[in-house]
Length: 394
Image (cartoon, rainbow, N blue to C red; front, top):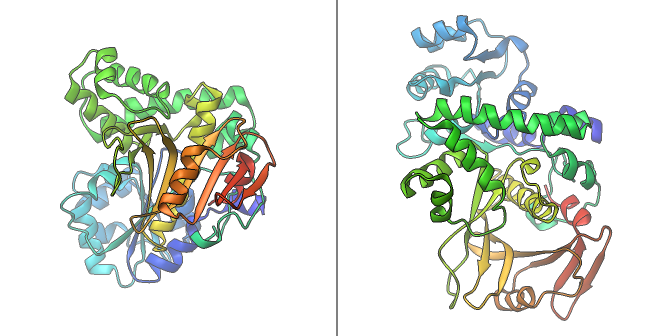
């Protein structure tokens, strides 16, 4: 299984059987160096069907005539990589699809700008299906479990200790060196700010954005205070807010919103922030919680993108201090509660209270003790070691 996972990724089957089988384009987005192009290549029948914006010959043909630019293709789908760097990529892609979409299956791969430009007014509406590729996880599988079958599988493809020490991205994780993984993380952050940020939007003070990125790493799992960040970076409130938004578009970080539907005394303001690269998080407890958040987000995105329901990741915090770290909603209703604890194996009071209030199907208290597994039927809460919990997700 591990060797197959290293060669193929979990999105390949759903992209082939969903978007391409329906005659639609597949848009695969995700963080820098997560393996989007590799996934795209495995969907092809011919290596000559890879067309990259950084190839000058292709670029010249593309801007002149998109149809002619892929005329030398072989059989099967074509992969258009990084074409979002073209200012007019949407219009040109629409023309290509409308003229040749029936006989040329199209896979488009890119990162922030691909996701950014499919928001708002979209001339490609109805012509594509978006998918979000995530880094590796403990239970990485070619055929991820459907929502109603989570935690049935216990196989750990990647040990938890490796993900904590080496991160979840392919290159550092498979490299096996903590020192090289730290260097990779640092260089990735530099390129993200200096290169990807430039492609997304013009920013004068790039170094200030880098400082902001460093500050965000210290706020993982906490309520995000834009005003506090503004004071530290010494720029305007609106500027910090925009920069945090851009770092989300660049897949540096993600935020989860508070759940508040039909509840009294809950805090509805503020969001919690986590990073895609856990190596940026120095505190071990915060890194562990970040890893749980990443696994949950990966599951939520996969189930939603694969049309298995509408899933979202949120959290709960009340005015009197009660908190549940994560709430997964299914079709806008609470479906799973997850509370992270270091050593507490007795069910958390807030988790028990809201499990009863919401009648959620799944209620987990995730603890750092490996192999731990105990169910409390009177509370309908299962206390699990983090290794077992993560292995049962996507």
